[in-house]
Amino acid sequence: MAHLFGDFILQPNSWVAEKESKKLKSKYLYLHVLIHTILSFILLWDLQLWWIAVLVGITHFMIDAAKLSFQTVNNKKNWFFIDQLLHILVIGGVSFYFNEFNFEFFKNQDFLKILVAALFLTTPASIFIKILLSSWTPVPETVNNIQSESLSSAGKYIGILERLLVFTFILVNHWEGVGFMVAAKSVFRFSDLAQAKQRKLTEYVLIGTLLSFGMAVLTGILIK
Image (cartoon, rainbow, N blue to C red; front, top):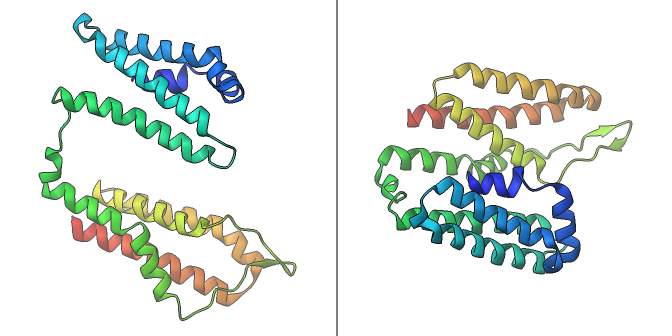
């Protein structure tokens, strides 16, 4: 809670901009670390655990300093996730030290089945679908003889997200959510296919969509 408050809610964009421009010379870097330390101390609310708040503050400064020193325009996104991962590892390490967090859940077979199924529905399922559709070559989407732009790997990530959502809906016994996903994707895709006016493209997209949803549904049923 202290991390979420300190890193996101109580850190204005103006502070972030100044830290990125002045780096270690920015006063907001030190104010940011101080806020984290104070928040950790307040939320722990135990004088005997003062060293945890100090540890969080020191490590937060070291991680943020490294991020500001090595971050560039090209790797900014990567450093954001590295920064957050390191902060969470520190918090997790403290929790593990006090036995408030352990790895006993890895012994739970139901958890492992769900984890393996979720992993299968990401990149492995994408590769299965790609191979199954390899007999047909995708027709470029064109509007007035001009190929429309598409985000890099967008289709892959859309497929992964939709399969994970469908899988989740099935696990929590909300099959109407699956219908919602099918309807939502159909609405967004309808305009593109209508403009393209290519039957092959429509069939290709339909087969891919049904394969994607079908894999998620069968996986969900199997795990249930």
